[in-house]
Amino acid sequence: MNSSSRSEWHAGGSGEPSMPKLVSLAEAAEQFGISVKTLRRRISDGTVRGYRVGRLIRVDMNDLLENLVEEIPAARCGQ
Image 1 (tube, rainbow, N blue to C red):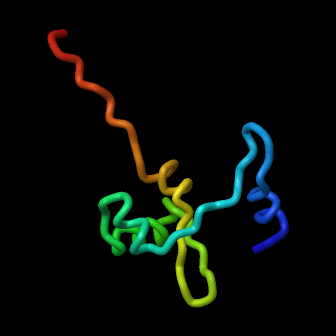
Image 2 (tube, one colour):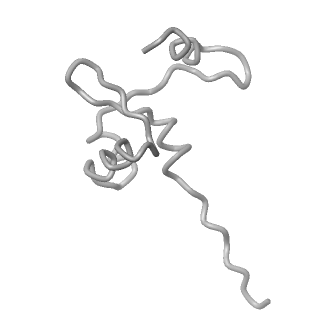
């Protein structure tokens, strides 16, 4: 990790990124109702960033919210 990556994580005022909430793949998968295998695929294809902490792989819950969760537009009935 370079120093510019670290500087993005500082807690700051409005609009500035804060420290990532790193959790295990199993915990994140349970929270989002998906499999660990799906998370590993998303890390591999670049949709989600994975972080190695020692031998463990962690993901940022905020990153998952931004990159995995998509709003489905409401269907227009009667038009």
